[in-house]
Length: 98
Image (cartoon, rainbow, N blue to C red; front, side, top):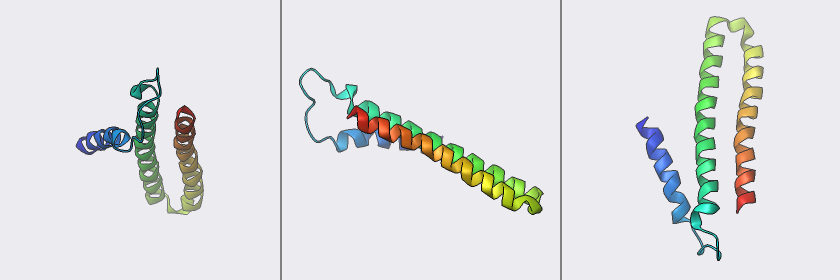
C-alpha cells in the first residue's frame, strides 16, 4: 500500500513539474492538464494491478494443470491486451483534454 501511495504522489507531482506554460485566460490549471494526468495515473495503477492478478492466476492454473498451459497462455495474452487497451483509451482522452 505504501508503494501505491508513493507512486500516486509522484504522478501527482509530475504534472506540476512538467507544466510548460500558464493556463489560458478563464481556465484554471486543475481544469485540464491536472485532471488528465491524474486520470492517467489511476488508470496505469489499476492496469498494473489487474495485469499482475491475471499473470498470477495464469501461473496458478498452469501449476495445477500443465497440459492446459497453451490454452491458459493464449487466454492470458488476450486478457492482458484488453486490460492494456483501457489505459490507451485514457491516454487518448488525456490528449483530447489538453
